[in-house]
Length: 381
Ligand SMILES: *Cc1c(COP(=O)(O)O)cnc(C)c1O
Image (tube, rainbow, N blue to C red; front, side, top):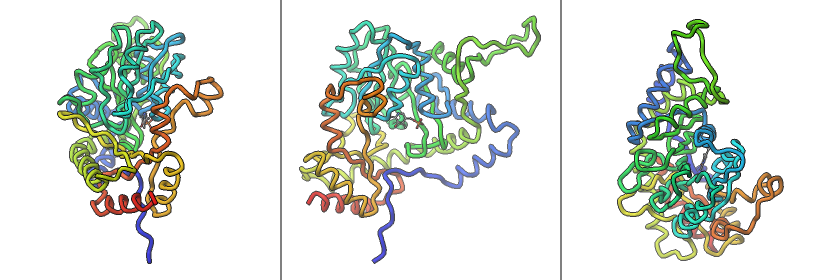
């Protein structure tokens, strides 16, 4: 018998229109800092409804830019859930602030907004990074953070999602929203990210931060000469290329269809696993909201030992399951170097003990979904 094909947990969609768009950008005079960057940023604004979009070389760079634009620095505390990729809390470390892990909510697997609102009353707390885990928009309306706290939504999983009819990244959301376009995410630019905001001042800071702290405007009347420019604060080279942005524009045009298919796949998983009480399915989006369905994590209710057995059985069946995520405070750098406690987030630990991410990408067929479910159920013994 031949082996069944490998099913990864996620995979990008690249079509001829993407390839054509990148080739066309390659043939043009400017392959970075050219017209495609603004075109992509405008397309993201149009898609999300945001007033400003600033593209970066990665989602991590976007989060770093947002943390710097927020003005977080040494002595500041930033609340963040441990159930995320390390970049969600690393962005605070980059600017000298201290992330404080606040547990997840058992019902949403997102930041516990009651606990975060309580902790936000601490005068050292200057920020919150709310992660929209797996693509379920974080419930920002329930976060009571106060005026001097900057809220960043880490929406790396949530492009194309909406909350209460408002697009993630658009008006009525966080102060800044960061997206990632790594190939495993719901759309890709190869590597890349974007920050959206309604605030023109934050947008200007983000733009400067992306290019060494140099404002884009020139002063033709500068007495030095027309070449003169200034570097007003410390920034980086976090620019994205025109090649990547041409790909981004082509991808964004098809994103809605992909998110729709992701939601169909999630529904199929739900039907097939309905009544299987050894598995907890990921939370659905509330009525009026749209889930981004970047990931499809399930929880093996029996916990770590059963999870390991299922994980190994699925891998042996050529199904590329993953675990999202190891709680961030468990990593050496946080645990040993920074001395973070290991016992403050029991809900994240409970989730992590059972977590397995099942394959989820738009090109998956219903037959693929059935295969994953039958192997999963068989693995439960
Ligand atoms: C992928 C991801 C990031 C980082 O994005 P990159 O583009 O890989 O730098 C940040 N936060 C979350 C939750 C992510 O999944």
